[in-house]
Length: 48
Image (cartoon, rainbow, N blue to C red):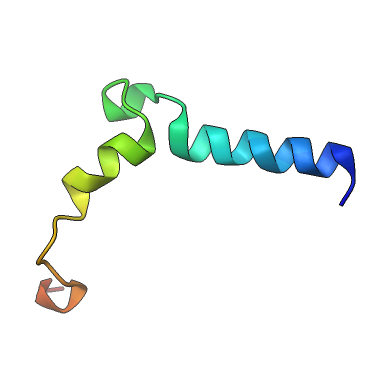
C-alpha cells in the first residue's frame, strides 16, 4: 500500500471514529455509538 493511501486511510478512521462532530454534540462517533446501540436490543426487536 502506498504511503499516501495509508495516510488517507488513517485520516478516514480518525474522522469516522475519534474526531468530535458537531452533529453528535461534540462527541466522537465511538463515544456516541453506545447511546444508539444499547446492549440487549436486537435489530429484530425493531418494527418498521
